[in-house]
Structures are given as structure tokens and as C-alpha cells.
Length: 267
Image 1 (tube, rainbow, N blue to C red):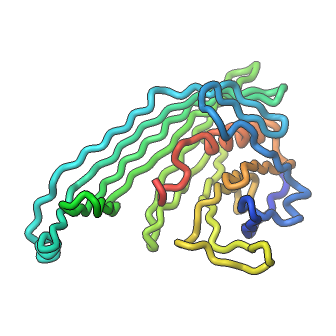
Image 2: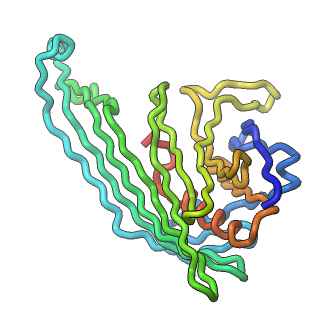
Image 3: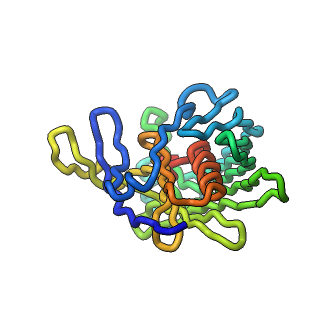
């Protein structure tokens, strides 16, 4: 690895989809690969991008549960709600997803085993009249995505670990931060969000509802080496990397594309 380019991520939007706009300096030093196989049936799902191809993705038995019970409170604000026939419940949502696959570029191969865990506590406001429905507010969220990446080689396989967890921001947004490491070398993973976009008339427009999730940025030593653009299904990998590191980033990027929960603010 000789040189890494810092990317100031600016987002563009067209009439079809928003996508990450990459500076020309990085474009000339990296390869952009369109990811195929993201949409459609998840049975025998395979991803293809650039020279990389995954095996059929095997997903374990997904587990999900919802637990809800009536909430008893004597706080003044809670008693005021009851005047308008509004009751509150505590609700807990839990999910666990597993997936595994191999990825190859014809010369190298890596095996990926991933686990996704999600748990959220909600406060549910509901009216006795079912026509009014209910409104839920998150009171606590836990999320973690982890993956073991094993490079398959003639010598002893080199294990890598990917860890991605949520971090609650001051603006009540949930960001994901993580890393990819083999114990000696570590890449960082940061969430990308689109705050503004350029419309078809060339004007900058703010995204309604606040910044929207766009993908992930992979860095090392302050420089960007990879981008996972989930809006336009694109994966960028810096050309000037050791082939083994490229395979690791390709495997990690694939797992990030395949994980079920992409935007924790809209779970």
C-alpha cells in the first residue's frame, strides 16, 4: 500500500437514484464495480461485481420476536394521556440473522460467516379506538453485525474479523461504526449519509427528514480505500492494494451489502 486518497463524500441524485460522487483523483486510483444480484429472490442469491463472484449465499434460520405488555405509570404526563383514552405499552423487538458464502476472483478465495443481531425497546402510544392506530417511539436500541473472513490459501488460512455496531448520535440518529482486522492491520468502517443532493435542475436540495443512509466508507491511516454505495449498488476498491487486502475488502463489502438491516433509523 503506497498512497491513500482522502475522499470528501458528496452525493448526487438523478431521477432514478442517488449515488456517491467520487472525486476524479480517486476514480483514477480505484475501480468501481456495479453489484449484480442484490435485488430479487434471496434463494440461491449470488453477487457479482468486477472480477469477484460469490457462491450461493446460505442464510440460517432467521429469528424474530415481538413482546409487548401494558405499561403502568403514575407520572402526570401519562395520566394526561389517559384523559384522551391513550394508553402506553412497552414493546421489545428482537432479530437474529445468519449468512455464509465464499467469494472468488478466479485466483483467490475467501469464506465469510456472518451474524446480525438487533434488539429495540419501544414505547407504544395507542388509542382505544383502533381507527387511530398506534405510534411507537424507540427508547433503546442495540445492534451488532460481525463476520469472520477466512482467506483460503496454500499456506495456513489468514483469519480476519469484521465488527460493526451502532452508535447513537446527539441528533438521535443511529450511526454504525466498525472495523476489519487480522490483529496486525486494521481498517475502519464509517457510515455514509446523504444530507443534500443535486436535483435534475442542478440545484442543491436538502433531504427531507434529515440525512439519509447511503452506505459505508472503509479507511486506513486516514485515507479511503473502499466505498460501499448501497444507493447505486456500487463497490469501490483502491487499485494500489495488496491482492490479499483487495480480497478481504471485497469479502467485507459483500457482507455489508447482504446484511438485512441497512438503515437503523428506518428499521
